[in-house]
Length: 130
Image 1 (cartoon, rainbow, N blue to C red):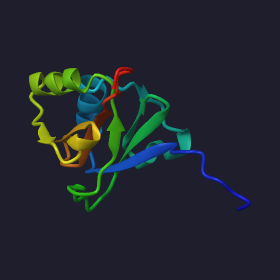
Image 2: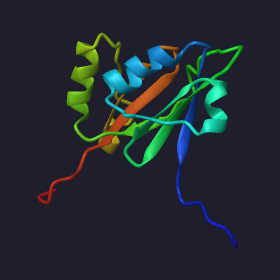
Image 3: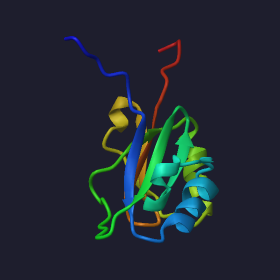
């Protein structure tokens, strides 16, 4: 093929109008993802952007907002037990899921402040003695 895909630049999640402070509290405050500036031409649209690792999450305003309760991004994590405990201490409901445990995947789901489903997952590394 004369083209190829390099990866994901960002994930867009929708939220209702006026979402910015709640998004900052959750994504920057709880998850610790730094807020990044939006380009000038996009500022009037509302919303807020965050950096996580090499990628970005864009929270965009949707007028007739309905949360994504099935479709979701899955974020790779190192130290997922610590993240789980941090979220619980922060008052975030964690939904554990064992469906991929036989593959060595630890994962759980949470809802952002707007009801969007988020998955956090960690692939367990096999030891050299396995």
